[in-house]
Length: 111
Image (cartoon, rainbow, N blue to C red):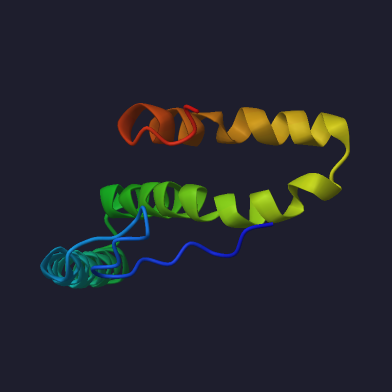
């Protein structure tokens, strides 16, 4: 079994190599989006606690669902070989939308 994929800046031997400037830009973008997401979560929590607005509660539920669904993919891959066949089929059905997105948007899993 091959080892984990590691991204190296400027390593021409790796198929996943990126220029150092692009990796720095991606790190900056990730930190900006992470900070904005955290600020949005704090703002939404304040709206739920202080004002008890119904739309804010619904938004929080949607946020939890849309964030936890892709994050649950790693544990699903880990437990998949140990499940009986009907459960494996159900798991394939549950995670098929993520596979479709990866194949359509990013070209992952087409080969």
